[in-house]
Length: 198
Image (cartoon, rainbow, N blue to C red; front, side, top):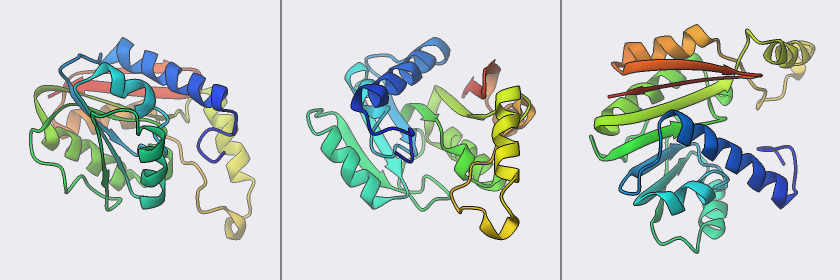
């Protein structure tokens, strides 16, 4: 419910399929890819990505989320799970994966931690590896509406999990500053996506 706003499995799966299409259309997924997801949660996206790649690694700060993800993806033999600190990809070896993606996660992070994960993605990617990140876009009408809804909370009543937006310039800057090349930014309704190559 907290991730997708629904408990209906078909809607959950539909959202995962939409994310898969976004990944395929931007950075692509190859059968020999070793893929790492930052903030995998209960494995919503991993469920549809794992069948397409050599290995899928789900990372999250929540051991409880990882337990749920392991149950949901138990039929896949090419998956593994790693608990993170919330600030880096410390357990992941340098230049060990081909693709890193992070979707619907930056809204829960401070700017410094967002950038640190982009730096860490660069570190763990092999040469030629790809990265994809997203967040809801402050500059879109839809994103501004979410911002205004959240601004309406009195400061002492804001929930701890309240979402924080990004701008297209922020996403693009993180990727360039981390060293990625062929950086692209795409606006899609409430969302901004950025991707690049190591």
